[in-house]
Amino acid sequence: MKKKIMVLFTVVWVSVFAIFSLSACGNDDGGTADDGPDELVMAFMTWVLPSDTQMIQDAMNEILIPRYNMSVELLIMDAASYQQNIRLMLTAGEQVDIMNTIMAGYTHLQGQGFLLDLEANNLIQNFGAGIPDAVGGWEILNGARIAGTLYGVPTNCDHAVGRGAIAVGTQFLDAIGFDVPSPNNDIIHISVAELDSILMQINEAFPEMETFRPTMPGGITQFMSIDPLGAEPFGVLLDPVNDLTVSNLFTSQAFYDFISMMYRWNNHGFISLDAAADDTPVTALVSAGRLMSYMTGGKPGIVAQESGLCAQPMTIFQTGPDMMNANAAARFPWAIPFTTANPERAMTLLNAFYTCPELSNLLIWGIEGVHYEMQTDGRVDFPAGLDAGTSGWHNGMAWNMPNQFISHVWMGDDLDLYDQLIEFNANAQISRAFGFIFDPAPVQNEIAAVTNAYEELIVSLGMGMVNPTTGIAQLNERLTAAGLYRIIDEKQSQLDAWVIAVGMN
Image 1: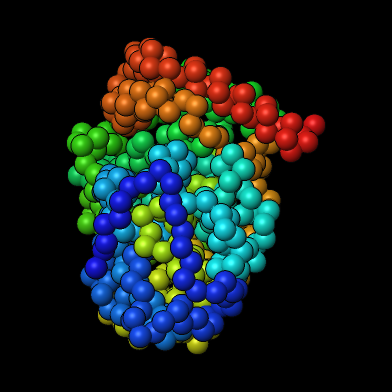
Image 2: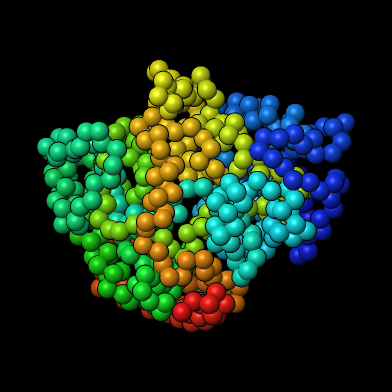
């Protein structure tokens, strides 16, 4: 059903029906019903591909067709292939009507001209009228602007992240006599030295298993209290709460300390020798009994989230603070690509997923009685005999879906989880640059060259397979030659202009 659309630099929108606002789960036949429902494509990624996609899609269309005269095709890809596949699809002009930008790079997609301006022709105002209130107002929406233009809608999730967090299988902690709290649903804050000791003990107790797997290159900044000012750490704020100076992360003490820690852990045998070449999701490795711990991000609900993904109880440790970066609202927004068959209908579909609890629950949890059951306390859980590994629909990525805040709360999470997430965001350390979105267009060539050099070296370096002193020196030599400092200068220039534009002291 996917259509191929000619790639044009200018996208002409032709509206074939009257402009009006949509209410949550309201009726909108979208035009002439005799023509049949409009067919739209919704693209996103999951850690493990589900088996019941057709069943979920059919259930969604039972809602969408009578209410909106549209149907949706769910185009789901695994995390390892999403970036490459979605970029190839957009380059080829294949129909994608709404998509999540995680992995693919929000600013990269915008810089390539792949994303539509969501306010052109009053698109979001007229066909996505429920979205601003759903995400918490225009202040949050404005955090997703690039150079003043809105290309994406933030997900309702934890905009802050707990730094230095690791998920460890609870069974391994029990085996070494670690006193796991009961109930075990909160993050345990410890020092790096204490974490070192825990990993050493489980490594000695289970030498046949991989102790720890860094998530590279995406997790490269997870153990550092810095603000990367975008998706790539090419020019960062080393002290984002207090200082707006853009610096080279790779010459910093924070980076050296992190790489040295990974090198030390690798030398202790914590990390598999083939980790750099293995793109199996870490949660799948844990589920398969091959891995004991991995990087994650701290937040309310993270214990239940990771336990569900790993199909076993997990314990979360955190060594750093909770922080909110400049682009916290623009990390992985939902967007409308220029290859959409109809921008107005695409926005109508996006609005539905942000405002309709029935669609949100289908997208996040699946079908009641098949993939989950309602519990007496108001939460939901797997039906008897099913778990994350055997259910045909349990993506474990509620945070990456449009609006988890209108969905059910999963068993193991507090009933007030969504209130906790709002409070978590409010209490985190906030970068002084919050709301600043770097426009990479002036340094596209440098970013491409730096990215190529970076990707060649960072995985082995970040997994502790290279001596920190020589590896970091080689990385800086390559990045400098590729134009890193041109990017840093451009970021500083744009940040300085943004400070003036927003009237910051």
